[in-house]
Length: 362
Image (tube, rainbow, N blue to C red; front, top):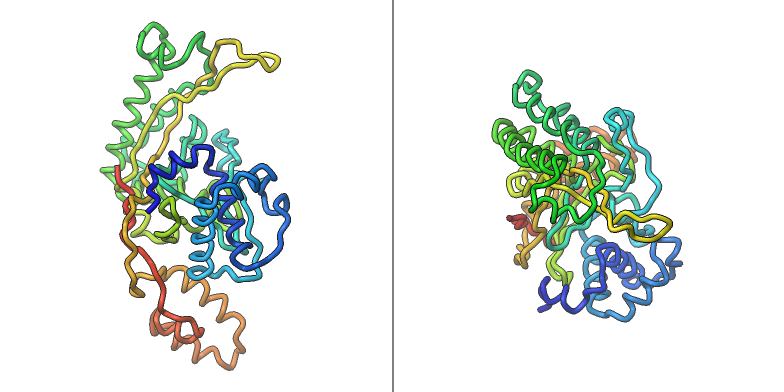
């Protein structure tokens, strides 16, 4: 079986966005439908690259088939790579000066908004403004934390982050030398941020869950109903044989991610150019990152019991709206009978494959 490590070795040219493209291509290939690559967010270069890599293309097709069988996406729905789509931010997000508009949705199929995670995955990597916005979004959704002294302590530390700086050499070199005061102060702030934010996570599990949910979904950043806000986490092994789909609305799932995500506060940098030529200098800024290990070749468990009830109930609500008013009493009785009855009522088959034991570990 193709493991994640061997996959990376054999397909080193494949980037995350190429894997997303392989799933979209797999969707159309699986259904035997024609498509224009440029209309679904795929470049001609990606088409050539993936057609020359049958392993990656086969993996994308397997994942696409799983999405078809385990979500509300239909055979006639459009599938597209959504990561470069034009988006807009909410007033709440803009209030903190955050301006990163990269969607959380990687793949859009019909109205199903998917964030793809394979191997080591980054839930967020936000600078000073982005981190403050994420922090306050989690705070807005948490109870009884406004007066916690830990809140002000963390906010003060994040506000001390380096928003933008220029270094005469690589940042790593300056960190080791300890000769640059701005770098030194920034590194101290990073250490304090990890320590104090970690204490806040311990103080409030609710806050930690909301922090993870916002990092995964972008609900507050883009708006809960925005196509840019991911509603589902699509998690897979590199070969596409073990696939999971989890609703970001699921508190238990968000809790499991929150407990296993690895918090990092660090510098990011980029080579500084002048008229297209490298100057030898580097721009740098502070970021807070959340890292998880998407899946470690975990086996698929075949069961109906933990089928995503949230997705079922949301689909059921839309289904019910289309029913005649004379049938509403019967529908309500069925709705109150539980998820299994809802599935039976809609004529869906309860025979699905789902893995409830995602291994997001350090």
